[in-house]
Amino acid sequence: MLWLKAWLETRWKIAYAFVIGAIVVGAPLWAAKGAHAGDPRGLIMNLLEGILFLVFLVPIMLAGSGIQTASSTRPGAREKGSAGSTLFTLSLPVTRTRLFVVRTIIGALETSAVLTLVLIAAWLLLPPLRVGAHDALGLFAVVVSSNLFVYAISACLSTFCDEGWRARLSLLVLMAVVILMRSININIVGLLVVASPLFTHQIPWMTIIAACVFAVVVLTIALIIIQKREY
Amino acid sequence: MSEMVIEIEGLRKSFGSHAALDGLDLRVPAGSVFGFLGRNGAGKTTTIKHLLGLIKADGGSARIFGETVADPSTNAGIRRRIGFVTEDKDLYPYMTVDGIIRFTRPFFPGWRRDLEQQYLDLFDLPRDKSIAKLSKGMRSKLMLLLAISHGAELLVLDEPMEGLDPAVVEQLLRELVVITAEQGTMIFFSSHQLADVEQIADHVAIIDAGKTLVCGQLDDLKMNYHRLSVVCSDEPPSDIGRLDGVVSVRRTGRMLSMLVSHNAEIIAARVQQSSGAAVERFPVTLKEVFLEHVGINKCSG
Image (tube, rainbow over all chains, first blue to last red; front, side):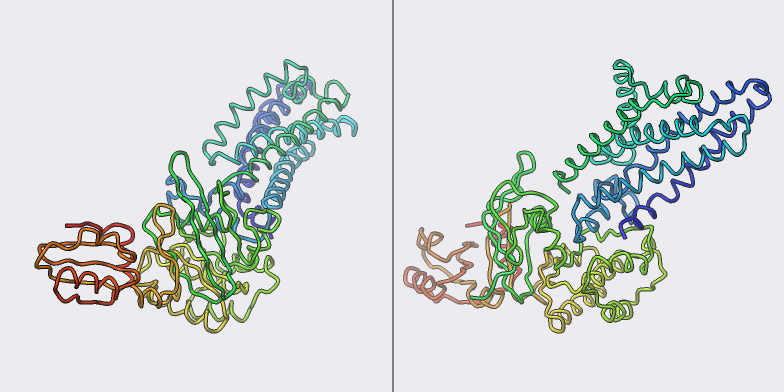
């Protein structure tokens, strides 16, 4: 039943994410459709920039709710520092590891699902984007691994920040991590735009694996924090 | 000696420089309705949170049903046998009454649908009502329903009557008595509402500044504690406050009033001998014992 709780907590955010996805990806594509009629590269660049925005935004929107975030029936309770319904959740006969793992998997699936559906919608609506299976698989792998990379950071921050601070800190930490990773040639931002498999026609496995390993390490740190945290 | 369900020895917990628990000792016997008393900030909620594995102690030990609560591998098993009602009574606002019942049910193999329906009817809780729209009193009832229906052996209630109107308090107190009688459920509840405690508890502990001041059966406490009163013609013996059993001494003019926890007869005889006046002995209420122990009424003339 923990999956149901996770779903109920984020279902409206998923709806918002879809709306934002439609606007962020759809509007530039629509505007650029005529301008780039003979140049699919410009259209693809617009799509990738939209997806890059979503890859950063959607995980930050959807990560976090769960055992570590206060959800209160009383208006303003979180501002007063109340643990809210977290105490009820933690009083259930479930280990913190299970609570965290279920919440994290559901959140990661939700964010991946939103981005996948946006990609499918773009592919269906815009014929120039109907690239070969190899390139499409490459783009999908890059988007999902980048999504996990961002999600892990936001989920980790949610173990000790409330919703408002988590979103702000996620952006700051992401900027710092992206700059750091560029310096060691693991460039997630570049992969999503200029070095995309749609242009290079190669799947950057090493960077994808690095992003996934990074996500697992950060989520493990988050789990350790959850185990040690006091409520 | 009866089996102990909760055993706490020398529990210590500090938040920064503030010692919330300072060597707390507690023994809660099986089958009891245990009132856990203390002022705000005395350490009641910290103790309960430790029992549920929500915080870790700096020292000492705590066991429930013989299992160490600090061990994460056993704590989930302990929670399966416990029903917890939080101080805030916060549940998931995005669920309905029926939704949270269906959510909670699978965690407890011994869930009793008959009790679920019985308490839904008794507490007049509509299944389709959103939790966000329930009053605090209704949420208290819902939390109690969830705790009872899963067949908890021990109910841990943190300030269950806080913020509720007298009618709801009366109904909840009555139901707690019924639950104990019919289901054999033990109840451990924290409160600073002394009248509520006196109404249903058979055992009490009074804590202050993270230490246990009194712990025992309520009847024994009422039997052993007395107020001694005497009108002194001369100065009372100077060492009177140091006699074994004297909790507090108060002097107003020639009137000397003492709260004693035991040895009332010996102390009365000693005072009578030195003052030459007859000593009157009065029974005391839990409120008097509480106030004297936590220092609110402590003063000497």
